[in-house]
Image (tube, rainbow over all chains, first blue to last red; front, side, top):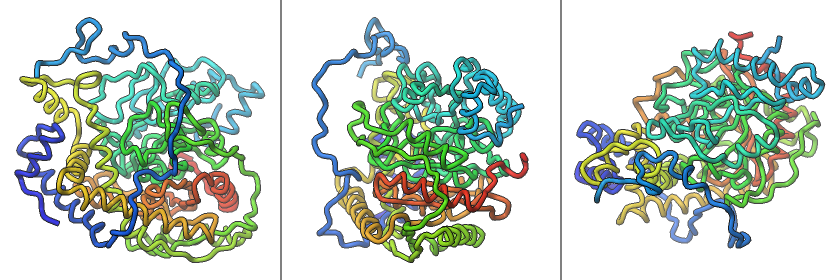
Length: 94
Length: 468
């Protein structure tokens, strides 16, 4: 496995919407490379014939009755909003 | 005078039913214990001072579990002022049984850690030795139970966050079978692994609390029907087949004192009539940790995307909306969530998915198969829960990988969705050692039976020595 360089760290941070400081890029970048070196151990195994497990239970098609239930009151929904306008969450323009 | 250090939930319930004490007296006794010992331990992030109405038992709840009207931070600055507007299903079930929430317990940020040192609000200290960690991420719940600051508690476990702190604090903790307890209203970390479970002083208390929270919930489609839960009574183990996986009991890094205490417990189980034999889980131990640290961060990077400053939690304004997201997340998340978000985003990104996340999911299949094969021959497998006793605060904070290895023995069964019970089995260097019991899916009754018999035979004193 290849080491991730500074540009890749910045790319991944951008994907994850994290505005890392230069100090964080430096420190987390080093730690990420150490961790990746350890977890890359999974690539030692030849698993071409093995099915992936995404979930430990064999649940298929979990159905629920199609009955409407009350939603949360709008005041509760907005109770933790950092900023609101009327019945909306207010955010800065894109 | 109510001695909260010694009082079990079962005894407290009996005292309440016989009206020997009132609900208010009981609640006040725990508040007094919190006032006396929590300034040193910091098990709680929030204490409910006016919750004493009613005749039910108090319960402490890990701060990743939603509690209506009671702050829920997940140990993170990004949720510093968050107050849930609804109860998690487990919270609601506790309340339906009359239990009263006495407080919210400290946790590593978003349950990511093995020592509670990743809490944005400062670490919890181990009641047996406050210079040491209580384990994590549920160190707050484990410390609260051990120090008599709650009769029992709820925790959450993704790769060991109930079992490992229970081991380090000397109490009983169950990570239930995946799907047996609803996660609705709990703050998600890694959804194919997260489980909520009980922390208690005794196996019977643990089983009773599990019976309150377990079972299918329409609000969590991963939940399943759970067989009736039996409170264990038998003290013999005849007919029980116990497997001792070689790798999990001989892996480098297990302290000699830990291995010795576990050996004593295994010998005791044999004396009680259990059939003990050796078995092997070679790949689960070798590849469990790497597999976990791909799957869990990948899922975390997705789950933690919701913390964007829009609907709840911290907001740090920048120029445009994207900058608002980025600044909010940089200011609100601590180092460990950032590391895991970065690692998970990378492992899921184009060009790397197959090599990392895809491969890890296949390893997960192998781990599950290995356990399935072992359970054809055995009812329960045993090992130390943690390779070490509680380590000093600060010992592993500079080295994330060393911290991750704390969970090398708890992770494999979590990957396979299996239940695991920690039962204290002795002391090493004056600190508790935990025995881990693992069974097939939905075998909780067997784990309780074996755990109870060993607990009775060993007679471990759960009150920390320095507080006796």
